[in-house]
Length: 200
Image 1 (tube, rainbow, N blue to C red):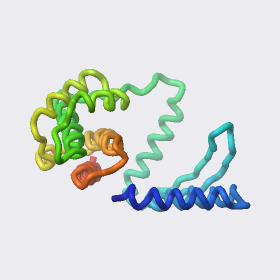
Image 2 (image 1 turned 180 degrees about the vertical axis):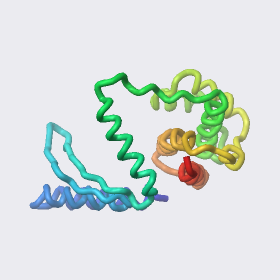
Image 3 (image 1 turned 180 degrees about the horizontal axis):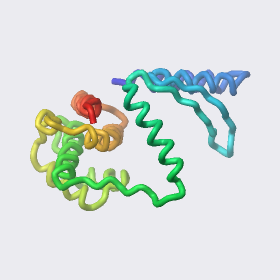
């Protein structure tokens, strides 16, 4: 699993950073290297210590996995957002009832995939979901969807890229609740990532 590969490497680099005599230069290179693992070209332009935090400013180039058209659209959207920063805040994303239902079932699948050999106990899961900020309507839908086994193949068939983009970070958060990713969870995350690559 990705986490099993990356975390020991990160711990090692942090120890090296702590013992380095040129901490600033080492940290700058380390941050660029970490983002490089994700295919992101990044350059640190500013780095400062503030209380118990490190503040970092970055210049980020187009990620390797990003389509040129998508990257140009992202830059255009950022420019337009900056010009409209004094205007009204952006409206929250509103899902149709069908999208909401599919999202609830997708998240239920991820929860089920996290415990493939045992039945999900709602009373154990509920506090964790509330901790992730899920609203009551979402919780009720997930609870209902957990009552029957969900099929990843059915759920991802015809899944649109926008809904996959909404589902993916939620699915990642659910997968990491127990600090491990099962094979079924990994399959679900991969399927969502693949769905996001569809043309918008």
